[in-house]
Image (cartoon, rainbow, N blue to C red; front, side):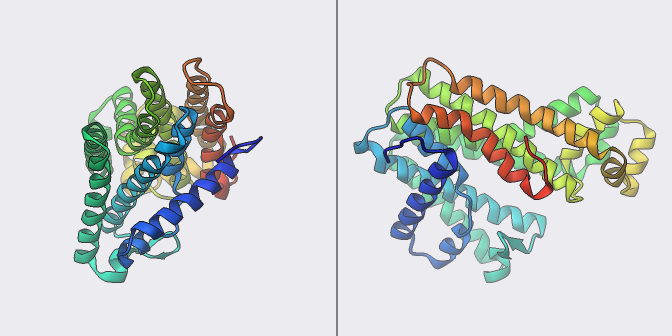
Length: 319
């Protein structure tokens, strides 16, 4: 793709078409196709943007596209399992896969998708395979921490200092979401045959984008009334500490309603401030002299804000 004053939304649309065509060519299983349909394909977009920003050659493009499909397979597999664990019956405006075909078959389809993703990475060499395994392990551990944290929110808040609660919240974000963004950008750089310094720069860039994205996602969930670990950040920022009154409101289910009704402007500013930090950090990294100057470098700078705002548009918040 030859860019001439192209914006990130235009690049994003191009990636969606390219990945869609490759999925159609490669994937024959109808249940896997169903699970992949309707996805934003954001992580593949970050992989291919990283590949282009690192001056990936036309000869290596197909391998990068294969890796992008692998990332989408792994991400969509995790969503299948998330829906089962969370008892969610819809995904992307349609019945969740486990509703459509049953819980057992859906679990196995998710495993099959992970296997396909790993096979792609293995075909690209042991380095790619190890990166995939490391990212998948981080995602699993992060998800397990997330489940435990949400299920025992009251007990954890009662026993931990505010500072430790914030650290644990960001640790979960890094593992369950930012790790896959970082891996996508890292993989794009590797497929472009970038040197180790540039690969590390792209990994760190992806991490910052992933953190900003998950913060936006958690903020949207809170504004829609979902009481999850994302409540930790505004509680500490709004109330300063976790006292008996806070715990009582949490136990009675009033804490989130109070935060939204009484402190909605403060809640918005807390999340906007945190999200801006990571957007700006991603932009700083994208401005590094190590990254070659090109149209794609400019898209690296543009992408974080676009991604976050696309997530938050339904609640009327713009960064």
